[in-house]
Length: 438
Ligand code: ACO
Image (tube, rainbow, N blue to C red; front, side):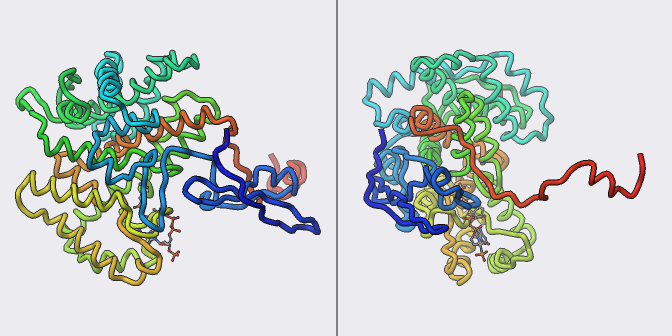
């Protein structure tokens, strides 16, 4: 049942006719033109590259106000959730729509333990990738491979979906840790039933036969918070991909695997890796923050300041604010001293913020600007940063996939276009113009 209210009509005049276009309003006052009948009534499609103005449907999961810098999951502010919840509680909130009671939480946690292992045959897959394989490629391939080991999703029973959701949430973390071990050339560490979600991940990452790793509570809390910051962000690029793939009734694993690939790009989740690479390179080459900002402003340089700018936020990204706090805490806990990269990042932020190019375009630090520095301080290598983002984003992808599946007004995603290619022609007339004979 639709939850948007019709609050009036807009009038479109075209080719001598008037058309009423319903105006809808959501619970936070966002307004939208309902153009579902536009093509049928007028023969027109809308032209909206990058879907900048397109609302793909209703959603009751996440609210973003890009002008005020507000982000809420299921009505709760991101700052509130990061302060008072674990990542697993937030995952439950996103998937089920409400925060778990203690007994619901324990049952969910037990599911995470039960489903944390990978089929032993999947270990062979890790072994055969080249040593330099990017962990995002491995992650995407492994996620879709899960569908070959756990095909019961093909049934549409709720219980089967619940198990699939638990499997995915739990196993993605195991896959991520195994891909790190592969990269390091270290033996795999299996999940443990006595550790909670984030502790378990850290243990699988950092325990070795010669290091009896004990998860550090400060690092564990910071990891919980960072994953919460990533957990959902309404109709972003990767989520739109997950929904588009899901709209063809492809299974959950296939849809999430596609989402992982979309997240990988440097304009999206891959920006966290780029931020660190740019900062490290700037320090190595002695490039000043001012010089970096000038390069980013120069359109001919093809260089952007990664970790800056956002399609929706035209003010400070609330996730960046929390991430910068976490980042400082983890760095001071890990080393007790200043980090030249953090100092440089702060100077870069101040330089960009004081520049009219960034001010005029409302370009502020986004979530990726500080998260990488925090992951680095935890000992996570740069090429794993986007994998960390993917672990965090997974509950959001799942919630959005489920929401779309159960939404009666959704149809297979199939946008239109404005064709600008050659006009009709024939092979015969083309061949007659060829300057050679067969
Ligand atoms: N550095 C320099 N200039 C920028 C930047 C940047 N990081 N971001 C935007 N601009 C400029 C553009 O060149 C453009 O300038 P113009 O008006 O003179 O042509 C203007 O600001 C608007 O930018 P668009 O690219 O049109 O904005 P869009 O909404 O399409 O893109 C995006 C948003 C992709 C995030 C962009 O800001 C960007 O490339 N940022 C850097 C990459 C990044 O950090 N991505 C992570 C985003 S958060 C996330 O996905 C998890």
